[in-house]
Amino acid sequence: MEKEIKSGLVVFLFFTVLSGLLYPLLITGIAQLIWNNKANGSLIKLNNKIIGSKLVGQQFRNPAYFHGRPSNVVYAGNKSGATNLGPTSKKLIEETKKNILLIRNENKLSSDSKIPADLVFNSASGLDPHISPEAAKLQIPRISKVRGVPEEKIQKLLYKYIESEQFGILGSQRVNVLELNIDLDSLALR
Image (cartoon, rainbow, N blue to C red; front, side):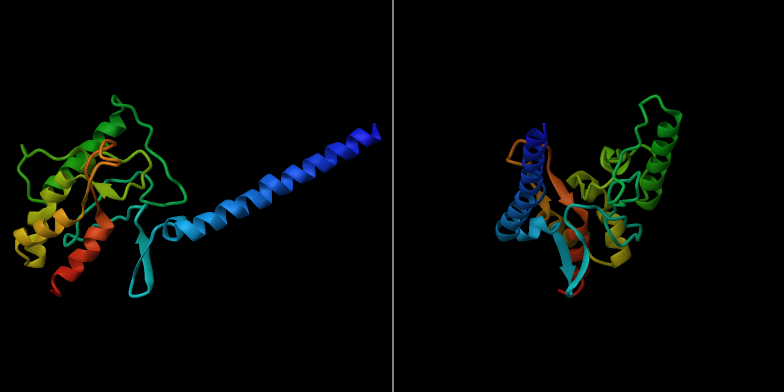
């Protein structure tokens, strides 16, 4: 019996070290060598200061910037999550109406203007850094007016940031809001 316990402990310790220490170190090392930026969170730096990640959205409320999707967790990366409210939920219906009213008011839209769904509904994770090109285009007149920059110039900048479907077939076209807003700030400098 003592022999079986010792061999069991040796096997347990061996696999603990192998799968709990050596394997993670190996995979982390490979990721750092091959995909350094991605392995470190795809961080975006401006003037040597980290201002965000390409993978996690941020809340923009300043009218001079493009706004992202609503977030149930206010883009807190440590507590990702959706609302889990169903389509018949009174709370979801009220939140949706509130979001529609907010979008209409801040963009000076008529009551019959169509609003892209991604500006009204939360993303599943609450961290989505992207909006649809249509959602971005809807915001151009507001940004143009606030910044005093012609709409055509902002639209040209927007087209530069439209990303294609993943692998050409998965998902839909999208725009990274943080990257677009960073370049939007430099637009006035050009």
